Length: 394
Image (cartoon, rainbow, N blue to C red; front, side):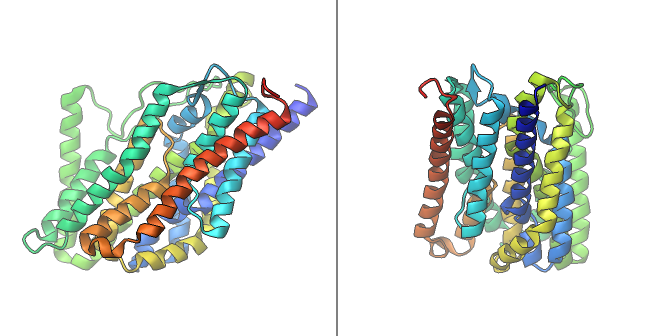
């Protein structure tokens, strides 16, 4: 391999690590435990430590699904060249860093997706309409599904006719049933193909077996949480909130690492450089370091906003966030954690304070920023390849 090619691969790897660091330092690293910090259930530094570890674990064990989709599923007929991969990662990380420094809600999933598609089209790729339909459905439905679930939970938790010794264990049972069915894709040897169909925590044969195991685990989780909240309501709610934060942090690593390392997957498969597992480990380490070095400041800042929510509304926010993030992982769809969290907060807020607590102007600016970041990333990706001279129209 020529020295110039090796240098390009090194630059791509460094860009990927920087992107992973930005993800860990951003809202994906700060949001999962911010409600627990705001509710005084855990300290800021301990939350940053845990979110880094859990994000790393999610990236390594579940990150391959979204990584493969980002690397090879967004444009048909072409494979991004090394220069194109660098362009994608620099655009994604640059826009994300701009959003963090200025406070604009730049969504990583939108910027990376836009950049990949822009670069792919510029070098002659064809639209992957089936994948676009899948991604579009998830992006469009997330505010309604996530906000709707959060609204329902926040409406029920404070009701006197539905005691929290009943409602909270039911939520715990639902979460437990989902957790036992999480799939962890298996990476094959150096070739890097991903085996279709992962394995759950308790793999069983047949639909009946899956349903039976889910019911058993869900019932056990519900019973444990019911016992906890009955003996100590406030403490039980805090501990359940911490558990949800851990699951959301794990899911954040699983769904977001693909945005950092996904563009590298075709390169390593074409050149048989390293195992995809090594790439996921690198992405996980980048998220971990980002969480440990920069997330504490963001956790503290975001937790101040969450402090007014209280544990019940925070629970209503995190339950749908976990469910949607894991759905995206299962489908292999890049998803914005900003969109997930903001939608859930709005839904829970509508149930508690009504529309008076929602700022239409701020919400509108957020949506415009999301759409604008997608279009801007596409334009930058396409334009960069034209300037570099790798586009047929250059």
